[in-house]
Amino acid sequence: MTHPTETTDWHSRANQSAHARFDPVEAFKRAEALAQQQRVAEAEQIYRQLLLAFPNEVAVLFNLALLVKSRGDLNEAEALLWRAVDWQPKSAALLNALGVVLAGRGKAEEAEAIYLRAIAIDAGDVESRYNLGVLLERNGHGPEALESYRESIKLRPDHSAALTRVGALLIEQGLFAEAISALDAAIAASPDYFDALYYRGWALSKLGKHDEALLVLESARTLRPNSFEVDFSIANALRDAARHDEALAAYQKLIEQRPDATELHVEFNNLAWASGRRNDFLTTFAIARKHFGNNVELMYLEALFHMRRDNWAAAENLLARAYRMAPDRADIAGQLARALSSQGRFEESYRLFMAAITLDSDALTHQQQLGFALLRDHQPAQALKIFERALVRNSDDQLSLAGLSLTYRELADSRYQQLVDHAKYVGVYDLAAPEGFADSLAFNRALAAELDALHTTKMEPLDQTLHGGTQTTGQLFEQTSGVIVQVRESIQSAITDYIRNLPDNPQHPMNRRRKQAFGFTGSWSCRLQSEGFHTNHVHPQGWISSAYYARLPFDQGTGFSNPRGWLGLGASNLALGNEDRMERFVQPKIGRLVLFPSFYWHGTVPFTDSGDRLSVAFDVVPQ
Image (cartoon, rainbow, N blue to C red):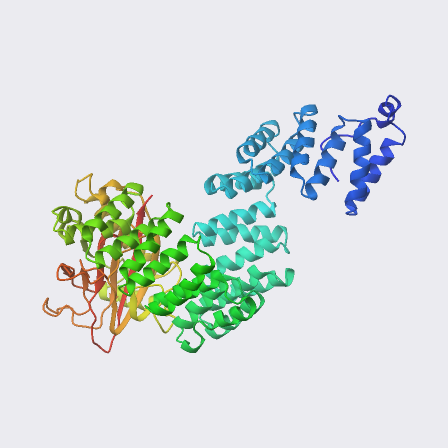
């Protein structure tokens, strides 16, 4: 076991100690050997004997601290290390060890200060820089953690752990090619480093290099044959490679091993539905019931799947049983209330909505769903109070703004026209073809070919508004080559223009968040077949939302009297009455981009044609 200081001249010290009844040098060596053999209790006993004779011996304090830390006693480890630091305040190794213990005890600010102190003493202290990065990353400071890891790598270019964390953080930023470069360096330094292989497989899968990703993940699995994370990642890679039968089999095998893992049920059932395997849909919950009976978490999840198919009665049955078992669960109470209100049982739902709000007053979703129930129950004045209260909590919440707009319209409040002004806030851009293409039609034919290759499922996703078509998975704009990159660049230019030309109204929600710098929170492609459409909806995660048309099956000159396949704005999905109707239609054209506030209600008109309607959509937020 290493320690931060040279051992003392034990013999001269021992001659002065009344407690010295053994050779301290041999005892210290014996304790170190026992610790290396994992005979912790015996080593600890010797160190404690030494500490009685030499209470300020830094090497003993340090080694004993590491031992008690290894058996989980962080409290004593911290006390021992502070004693050692008092005697050797300029030891970077001691400070680093203390920082690790402080971080383990949740004392993040103290740990950070200690790491910085160690680095100030020894600018070449690689481990303190690395551990500082770990601390920063754990506490949500990704950019600062990345910088700290990179400083470690400058000092030790083959620091495989630091290289791997750099790769992991770059993956989170969507910088997959850069991540792979860092992970390759980590693997070159440590060919059998599990974490580096695992993250490299993940990054390759995100880049669409599925075969290579699977090979790397299989290599990681040989190092940890029973790793749930690797097996789950392999199943996800098979899904992304459109090897749906293999992916479903992999998910099902994992579910049989860990039937309580909710993420497995989510992936299996989403894929079973989207790939058209109706007979497999929701079967995993029966498997889980054999193991656990009525498991609250799984009953809740199964109910959510039923709700996505508007099967409110089945959802109510599951949620009512789950609520009896867990009456303190706000999420269960809130979803049960939603299931009741969706069946028109408003009075029953209100009690449960209020229970959910009481149990979790920080969650806006229960207030929002109560507001929508009140609107459907023809109580817009009460709904207005709910949405106004929610917007006090978060003035930029898109779902609360969407609810507020409906209450204004139901109450014939003039503020509706100020909030929902389609003429001012809906932008229409006909994008020119990038250089190298004869015209927009040629460019969008190339774009459509790339998009078609990404539509690998047969059915619409369960959790989206699309009906009668398919939607791509993952982040479309994370593609790093091809025509998709070019359309993203053209779209970014249009967004910049849209933001620049927003009306100068500081009271409007669009202007309150106005910044020229922006990022994408989501990006995807939709392909609608004949009779397909999008239900009316809003985008809670956005600020600016969109539609871009790459292929259309119908005559683009269709008149307003028959706006088939057109984008409509204004009508909600609540069927509130005569006023709840489309107020503006935007005609699709190949190469046309439409931008609008994310809280604006919108949907599409179904069309009948032998061809399909292929589009790109995304959400933008200010940075």
